[in-house]
Each structure stands twice: as structure tokens, then as C-alpha cells.
Length: 184
Image 1: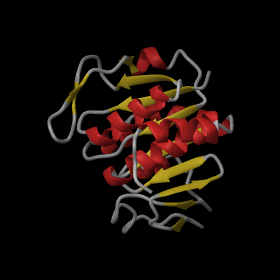
Image 2: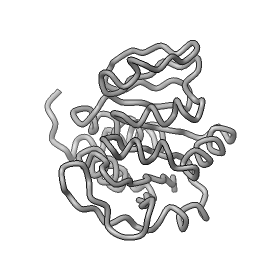
Image 3: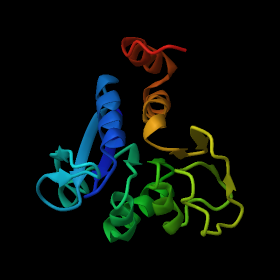
């Protein structure tokens, strides 16, 4: 069974976090939501999420993928957390999937993972950041090797479906998507 870590930081974008968690669970993926600190997390719009465990506890397990929800100041908290930076470096070194949405791709930039990559993010996130060889696309969801990025809350469902496809295959993605009764 595929295993995914979703770190949840104060001020994260709740629509992204919940969509990622929900769709991955629907696909039968083992998902751990981990708070940077113990206790409930207040999201950017005031929704309160209760992570499965703390990040310190979650770091005892191995994962096939780490997925960073965006939102501000949530992405800033992820960006400044040394444990997140360490996990990103380790997972990149092991050639595992790393995904980020909205403002969270800047966390991947800090970790040095976006050099020579095609990516997307919330508009404006990379306006003042120069990354060698990075190609900013601006599309809804971009996969470049083991790096998957997405634009924002409105693309959270497409992003999550791409994560399912990468982790457990197109057939499972199609099965989950059909249950969502989406048009197009």
C-alpha cells in the first residue's frame, strides 16, 4: 500500500489540505497528516484540522510521497521548518515523489529541488525568486520527474487525482474520479 505524509501547518489552505487527504484516502492510500506542533491546526480561513500525529512522530515512518498543502502563512511555516527541509532532502535523495500546491512550491525551492524543473504555483510566488533552469509554466498541475506542483485551491482536485495516478495507477484515479461525479 502506498504511504503519503501530508504536513499540516498553522495557516495552511484548508481546501487543499482536506482535498488531498480525502481523495488519497478514497484511493486506498495510507495517509498521515502531521502537525508541525502538537494539537489542532487552525487553517487560513479558520477551519480547524486535527492531524493524525505530530511531525516528530510521523518522521519515524517511511513514505512513498510527501505532499505540501499551500496557503499563507502555512507555506511559510513549512519553509522555515528544518524537519521539513530534512525530509525533502532525504526523499529527493531516495528518488521519492515530492508534491506541493499553491504557495508551497517555494518550500521546494528552499530545499534546492526546483533547479532545471518545470513547475507551477499560485501566481506571484516566484516573481522575486530566481532558480537556475526552472521553467515556470503556470498550468493547473505539472509533473516533472518526481516533482509534482499545482496552482492553488481551484486545482486541488486535479492535483490530488494526479497524485493518485502516480501512486496507484490510472485505473484507481479513474475509479475515484468517477465517484466524484465531475463534468469533463
